[in-house]
Image (cartoon, rainbow, N blue to C red; front, side):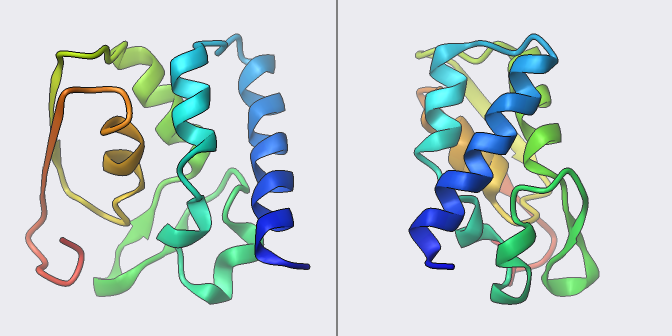
Length: 115
């Protein structure tokens, strides 16, 4: 399956799961759609990028699911003008989505590889 179709199908599934949970924030859903999740996981896990599960990343860590990232960002209610500090960069997906919602995002991690 080509990458673009994989992204669209993966996001569609994520969108449906989030709507079922009552998450309907248009800005958040747009930010998620504009941030290709497959860029934040290894190629070996591209097919599973939008599944609701942990995925291994460099340095022995794990990336949280897109579902959990969406729930977290929804609970934070980030708006333009807000500043966000993301401690523990991980895959960088949360920061990449948050930067589409906030004025500024700073992320730090103990591993230079992840930053």
